[in-house]
Image 1 (cartoon, rainbow, N blue to C red):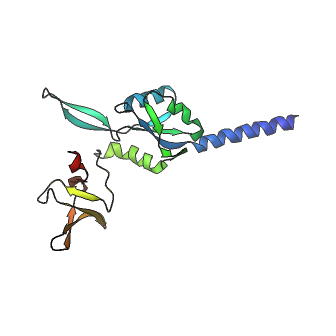
Image 2 (image 1 turned 90 degrees about the vertical axis):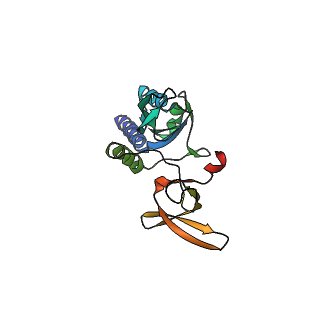
Image 3 (image 1 turned 120 degrees about the vertical axis):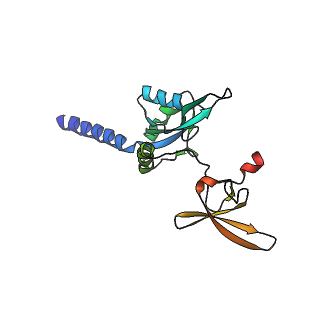
Amino acid sequence: MLGNLAAKERKIGESVGAQAFSAKWFAAYTNSRHEKSVASQCAERRIESFLPLYTTRHRWRNRCEMLVELPLFRNYVFVRIDPRERVRVLELPGVLSLVGFGRTLAPLPDFEIEALRSGLGQRKIEPHPYLVIGERVRIKAGPMSGMEGVLVRKKNNFRVVLALDVIMQSVAVEVDADDLEPASNRSAA
């Protein structure tokens, strides 16, 4: 009888240990402007979470300026949970879903979250439009402002390949990522 009890305790200990190791980071998709509320609720319910914020100067209509802290990734809060406990997060007011593919959650690599955490205090970080190599982009600053091309990468630099269709020639221009935006933004404006 004592042997059975010890075996049961060992199984319980192993399953608790396995649960501790199966906790991963996931992105919780939230209602617009509910990120801070969701992070606060996670803390209240003892769900490990991470909401990266950046500071920016905001000018109100009455010309008053203030420094405000905004989420680095709009509509997202990162949570560290066991996938089997996803309901604990989905029950939080303001959480719409957990990012995944169908019913399978998409975990985020631990090193990415840790890099974000350490980088926030050491460098100026702010949101930037998501750009993909091969995507059509527009140069938004500098002497070539307004030109559109395809984003390519050469070593550590970004280049935009600009095509002159009339003469069927192209040139590659080195640009800062800050001076680029997706070309699709123009039609929305």
